[in-house]
Image (cartoon, rainbow, N blue to C red; front, side, top):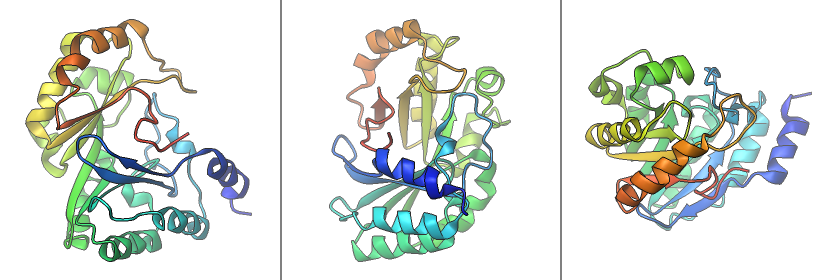
Length: 245
């Protein structure tokens, strides 16, 4: 029996997988399911539990989610609990077909840095679309990123890190971060990526937990300064885009 028959049914019942983002850059967003994050070592993340080893069951779920896409904004963001390269090929073909049918011109995918060398081929495969690749970077602070968050991104140079990516996710609200370090991340992010998304750490099942003081400092000193920046999305809750559980 595929491992996701019961576990997948549980997620289908409680997890929203389609939404519309109406602020700043308007787009539709879908949360698809793949085979699972191949890295799986980030100390702060438990999203990798949304996975299934059966390509047939994944495609069945993903096709239902993609059927809700309307093309209203001509812009679609595709996320899964891992990287785009962990989606099955039938789902990838359906993404292309859906975008063509709905006249979607801009497409966003996410990938871990370890997949960077596969991105040029993916861009070629999706050459009919304006493809935006998003990196889960979390912070430019190398020591914090690798020693605390265990991201597995050994590169330190911001320009090299951003070479294959157009957008990046950052994670704020953890002990050890400061107003200065978070602002430096924002400034470096804007200098090296087209857009950035700031995620505030939310309580989950990992050992890394939100720090109330760090979050207070962000909300009082940085949020007012950057909340209206059209190049920055800020998620106070991890479901603020309307997908997830």
